[in-house]
Length: 107
Image (cartoon, rainbow, N blue to C red; front, side, top):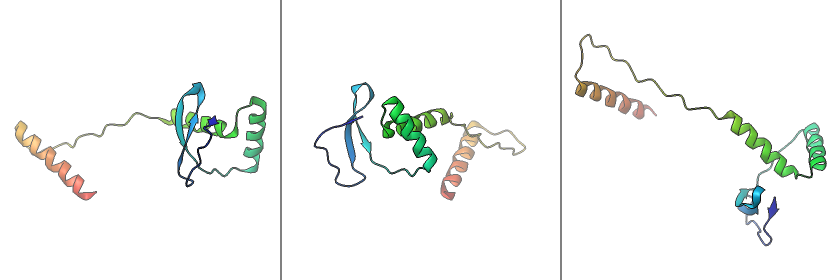
């Protein structure tokens, strides 16, 4: 990572311009991470061995975790209606819309 010179954040939440992997220009938000001593020692060693900054190693680790944790959204089942008689399509539409409206009102 290479921080663009002259970029000074006004607050800790200001985004900083940077040139990332592959020379792409982007922005980052500064954050603080607390690490146990053992993890800090391992991170220092990996950074020294690979020549990659600790910040970049942390970003890569977070990206790997989030990429592997992506799960497809599970579709919700529609409610089942049993009135003892068959309903017309319009009645079914009305019942479904009413159910959705009731659920939305509870939120």
